[in-house]
Picture (cartoon, each protein chain N blue to C red):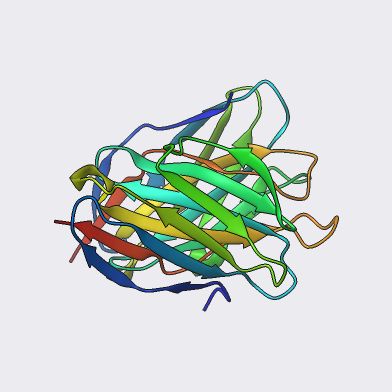
Length: 114
Length: 115
């Protein structure tokens, strides 16, 4: 158990819809990262938050957005969903203060758009 | 920008044989290097990491990796594999010198261990 919790584990939705994926980081971790894993693109970094503020942005579509709340949990919002958005979405956390740590990953949310 | 190349997409091997999974990276700054393993329908689990110091790092499940700065490589090795090592393995790089930062992953290597 990595200590990172993602909900839901599976999500099936129709094209055009909007979904929210939730992530609770490890206790004490201030950084949250979102990654998308698909067969054709591999593991792609989407976005990073640190203590509530956006720190880095990767290949995140404009239809996608994220935020990190005061209790440090994070949500990834995906809207106007397309078939190509079907993927495994991972959340990871790291970065307790100045100590260098690796990123710990959740079990992922498998999104299927039909 | 950083990039990671895993030179083999699939590696089949027999049980108890040695294995090497190859990883090369590109970066203009100092880096931290990681190997993660992903079992079917699961998240990524850290196998080992190189942050600084000794270039030979040991991880869980008998895996080790060697950081070679001149060749910009971080190959993963295990002297004797088990059926349970069958999984997908990812090499990743991150900017060094910070306590946090995004990971850039390679495309993954599927290791299949045959009896």
